Image 1: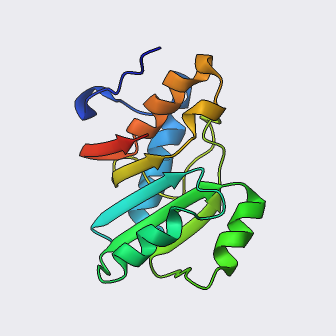
Image 2 (image 1 turned 135 degrees about the horizontal axis):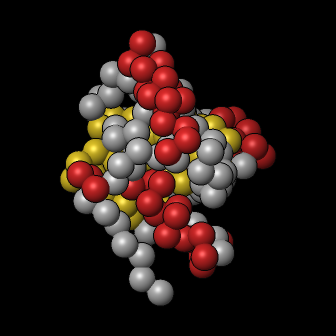
Length: 150
């Protein structure tokens, strides 16, 4: 099985044709208000970060880079574990519940702002028929030149 990652100029909108107006409204909403880490210059999303086995080493690396920010998405029980960890710093990390397979579920930030997306053991838990769609969806969140690591 091969997974293609489209170049930034070919990624297009996440919205389907029938939802273009709502997508434009959502993007305007982000422009009109701040979102978590809206002032950060370097942003990472870790998809499916579980109990934080990668989150906390990344946060320790970023502690001297206040312009950096880490988003984490995972299940509600894991969010509680990460938020209660002594190394969790809300100033540099935002943990939220999200299903990467649900292409209608918005992220708490606009498309095209992430520098890195990390997927450790995530694709292996997704049905092969849905993998390409997940990669396409995530690639739209990346800045031009951003990296998707799995």
